[in-house]
Image (cartoon, rainbow, N blue to C red; front, side, top):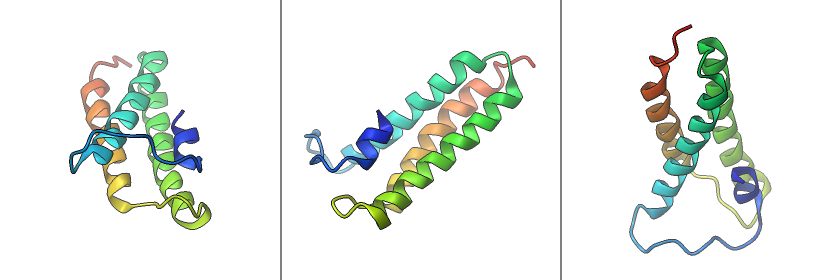
Length: 100
């Protein structure tokens, strides 16, 4: 879903009108991605760390591709930061719950 939304040329969905709505959406989507990474890996700390790094890489890649390759989209550093914060908040919450 994030890949579709990131690379789609469909006009941006209607979001509530407040200044940080877009950044909050980025935060929430990537926080949810991190939850979905945790669920199958909750017994494997190393795999959780590796897949978290892959999620961060994907977040960066989507912004770079939007900036350079999709004319109807713009990649923004602040979008990446919101993505990163979403990932990190969930990572910090779950990392010590993994026993191995």
